[in-house]
Amino acid sequence: MRAWLSLASFLGGIVLLTSACATSEQWSEWRGHTTHFASGTHGVFSLRNNNDGSNPRVARTDVDAARSENWWGKAITVSPEQIFQN
Amino acid sequence: MSRYDRVARRGLPAALLLLGVCFVAQASAAPADALMPVEKYTTAKAKNLANAHRLRLLEFSEQIYNCMPWLFVYPGHLGFPRDKDRPGDDRYLSTWIYVDQREDPVFAALPRERRVSAMFSRYGVDMLRRMAALSDVVDDGDVAGLSVVLSWLKPGTSRPGQQPVNETFALFIDKATAAEFLAKRVGPDDFISRAKFNLFDGESLVGRVPLQVWEDSFNSTYKIANYEPPKGAQCQ
Image (cartoon, rainbow over all chains, first blue to last red):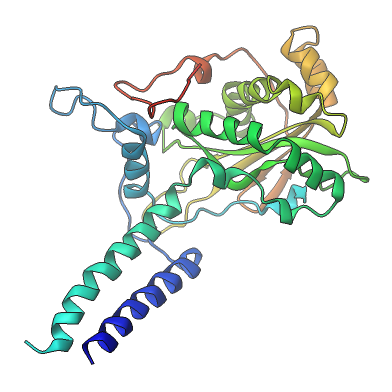
């Protein structure tokens, strides 16, 4: 029984993950998202440098994290088919 | 506490962690993800190019990912597509870059044509230069030219409750003109007259806009303070 519940829980997590990815383009996180980069220029320019005067090192993973924290949904962008043919 | 509760308590954090991984994946992608999958090409010529130059394109993608984190190659859009409007099967070494730039009052105050010129001068020319440096790829007889596509946030469209809009500039140029321009043997005006380019406002075609190209070394000289590229990355 316990094994069955564990399996069901795991499969449920997979379904949740898959459905979340599949429908991500329909998400609307941008609604009400007020985050802005303090620098007003590039998102990665406002990483944690100098916040406490200690100048910590910034790794590539920090850039990904900062970008995802400030990601507010898929922007309206031209489709590749309007530019290219494969 | 029932067995079900215990399992649920273990399963929920795991599911949330997986969801978080999925969410982060929307905003970041590994260098290999930038390459257009071979199976998506529709002609043998393109598939051969993709197979022959895969490692070089992967190196190129890694350099952008590791050394220019303010840029983001759209997944699947580094490769050898053809121009939609051009008959035949001319293949272009092409990369589609998103410039990670947020609202900026100075940039927002520029007229649209000036924004395009600024973005192409700053990022497009440098990308052309970097692609042209892949000499074994560009010298392949099946590569007709270079293409760079730039997208950036259209000023004033990231307000709360409003879906942001990207402006996208797509340019194609034959490789002889690209080489001459980068070597400064062809001036900006001739380069512009020989290039095929369009601007898109969101999903809408704006068309060919007045373009100016000037020197801008930002992309090749800028360093993020305290940024440490991953070990083994060679940034230049």
